[in-house]
Image (cartoon, rainbow, N blue to C red; front, side, top):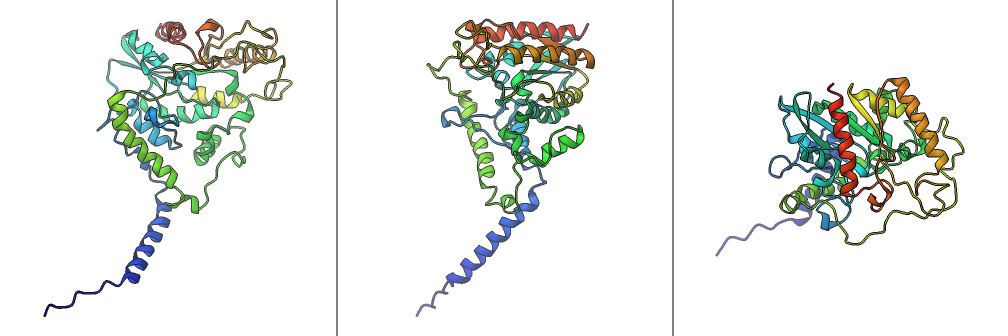
Length: 366
């Protein structure tokens, strides 16, 4: 007669498992100050990405996430040891710098590297830290973290759409990094309200494992996409047909509901960004200048002429007063060299910009 098999008491097992999960779920709160995003398969098992992860389509082997540590950890910059013969240039800006509809080699960073530029007796290596939302605060947040990577020169490309006060905290990556933004407000004495309703404040439940399940899933997906991206080099979708940037425009003079730009632009954020690194070149980036319907009223979809003309005058005066290195390239690129937006350029348009930027880099060494 065989001994009876021990009976598994299901209820106690389930109860213990539930209690362990509950404990682990709430213990996750105490991990919030541990930079888990810095743990990455990029720059070790997979090569680092040429630009920050961004996108919402599976075909691009890419995704958007709000963890700035994970974004930097996936970037080639984080895995590249600076050598004595490298002149390190960081490019900061919006989707035009990131390179919408451009391969990494066609972007400004890619073309600068391909031209084998030399500055200050060293070889220029440009890193693409652009990110596809338009906000000075977003740029400052990236700049503040990027300074640890020993740049010799920061090139900050921007445009009027990044300046309005109402744009500073609404970018999703800014809104979902409330604590980091509050640190920037304090550190640089910014005018922004640290309690602005645009900032996403995480409750205690939001900081548990269940509350953070989307962020954890995005982090894991980014690592999984590393294998697919490394084998294909694809990090965005390149449609054969897309809607071209508007040439015929509406006959209105509206810009963010403003009648004047005075006290409406976040020059305090710009000043903070320009103070992050002593050697920073500010660039007013190229934009499409329409010659279509109502182009006497608006330059393009973004800007009525009155607002953009006032902005350019204010920016040049501010740059002169602050003794900044400043380059105004607003009208550099012909209208037919823009793609689906008034700031997204073709490879030819990018090459025109790259030539000007290359000369500016070398001029800083004289």
